[in-house]
Length: 406
Ligand code: PLP
Image 1 (spheres, rainbow, N blue to C red):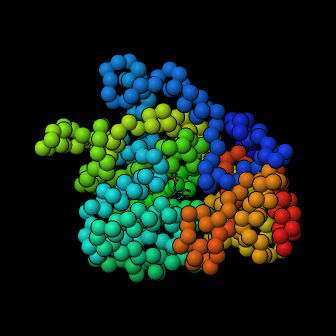
Image 2 (cartoon, rainbow, N blue to C red; image 1 turned 120 degrees about the horizontal axis):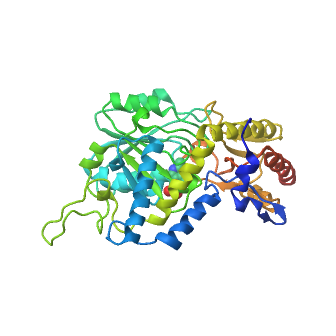
Image 3 (cartoon, helix red, strand yellow; image 1 turned 30 degrees about the vertical axis):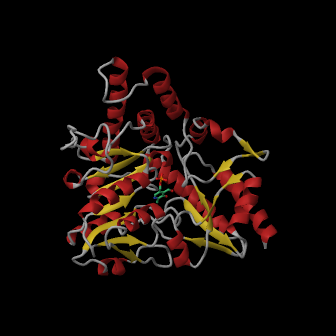
């Protein structure tokens, strides 16, 4: 792609210089976690070396600096997803915790017999929290099927709404199929039925420019470590009116107004949902990750990845016995596949010996695997720093491994 300086981008990621089993590392497990550029690691170091103090608790200079860093990131995240207010940005440990927060808190507003719509392609993080709700009351999960290309069955989706439907919870992008769901339309349809929508954006934010107001999402969850950021940090965006009606998720410091043994009141948003000391170091560094991605441009990264997706898919299709799961025209750079009768685990192990890091298994989407009639796949996924040369190395290794296992 023109003006896409891949060498410069790669030089920002020291880990890409690594060797594995004496071969240059070809890292194609970006869906699980993406690598971290030097500027983000420097930001972490900067807090530890120069500004570390607990946030929102001290009048002393270091505490004020650390608090400023955290709250500057909150404003940066607000801009990044175009939320109306920083009150709508809650820091969590990741997408998983963000969804659990909504399930535990919004879930308290649900009643016996209420229904939640999810899709067949959900990650366990967007299935199990809703099932846990069922420990105390009967909550019914209605599941939208998918078609042969791995796209949501729109007719089935429409047919699932009724007056017991209280939430739709679905992914923006599937971590297995790569499918980009038409969430703006799906959200609008849910709203016509008076139902709010939670979007699991874990696989979307580093590939698609997200505007929560334009999408009209009610909740949107994502993880920093999948967007070139630090581990252990995530974001829950929620519309203010919903967050206001929801009870706290966890109790402790920071989330209170006043505490007495008889009566405790809650802090205002967003702090009502942020009990205890947050990972303020990681939060500070999340700002660098967003700045880094936006300095390249999310759309330009996506165009680069799309080129790799097409380049890899075309070559993979020439390998005898190749089956690719997820063939939607609207797809992110994720390729899940099987070759003949070769076991996905064996393929992953052998590819690793050739320096190629891919994912194998059910990818935390067992219900999807069941619907596809398989146990697991091999998954290759691409990021800003992957190259066509790496795809060539991957394809050459894949041909060798496939031939060995036939
Ligand atoms: N949702 C999707 C679609 C994912 O791909 C993942 C992780 O792979 C998650 C949720 C969970 O993210 P985390 O483990 O960062 O909480």
